[in-house]
Amino acid sequence: MTVKIKQLVYLRKAVEVGNITQAARALNVAQTALGMQIRNLEDELGVTLLDRHSRGVTPTPAGEVLLRYADEILSLLDEAHSAVRRFGGSSAGQVVDFGLTPSLMRMVGDDILVDLAHRLPGITLRMVEDFSFVLIRQLEQGELTCALTFSTDIDPKFAHYPLLQEDLFYLSAPSLTPPATTTIDFRDILGGDLALTGRHDAVSRLVVNIARQLGHELTIAYEVQSIRAVKNLVAKGIAATIMPYGAAVGELRSGTLRARLITNPSVTRVLSFVFPSGHLNLFDTPDFRAFISAIADQLASKPGPVVRRL
Image 1 (cartoon, one colour):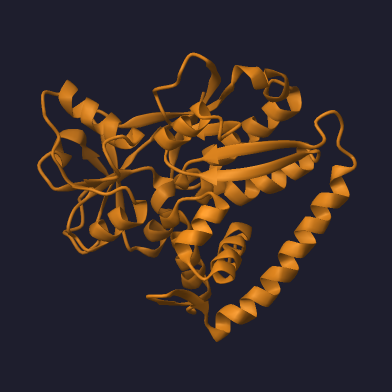
Image 2: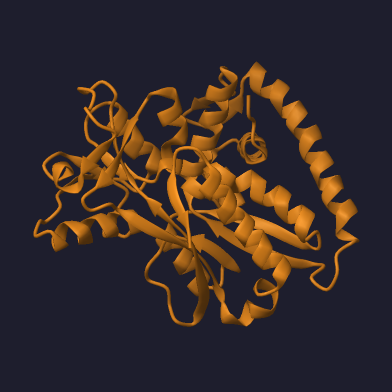
């Protein structure tokens, strides 16, 4: 059983304010991401933690029990953070607002927090989860210090360096006829209904551009700015989608969704670390570079995703 720290944080905030939307706003994360993490936690534990009603949310008896443990766990983490900060050097007291995409947050979010505490204990890390194009917008508006993003539209005023290349997958419902292979040609996905996460999302733009290069105009049957909603459509057999493996790792492991690697041509995206040039002194240090490199190494070693270090 794996319970993530952020799931406890999200659950506690949802109960504290009594509303999923207000909790997401207070934690500066997408509402769909917060709700998804709480539902993932319920699935992991096999119990309902929140009663959801028109007025908001309240904890179930099981939720109240878990919250008592969550308060103790999070309190101990705060104590540990305070205890190690006094060992920090010149970077002590710095706050880094770190942007991550939903698939990255799901795969390595908690590990990033733990690894940073070991490598750079003087830095306070605040993690923000959203789509790549939103993270770039937040960087431009000064709301983020840095981000791991798959965006291809990076303003020259930002410093960035590529970390890895990732192949994307075609996801469909397991109730459909089982495929003969574990791969699918790009042209074979053009005839069916696709659900994608909005025309501004990096994956949607990538797929549309590849289709045009092949002489086709891609028809998106369902455009939904919610990864969870897209996966629900796919699981019901209403549409298929194209996603990174990490965005649906739970559903793929449970058999709710089926994945096939796209080929001829493959659909790939590049993960880059992006930050304003004015923060060069911090992010170009050997310790921080090693921290970012460790994230990429961990992603490359995860079972399932097809990635290559750059």
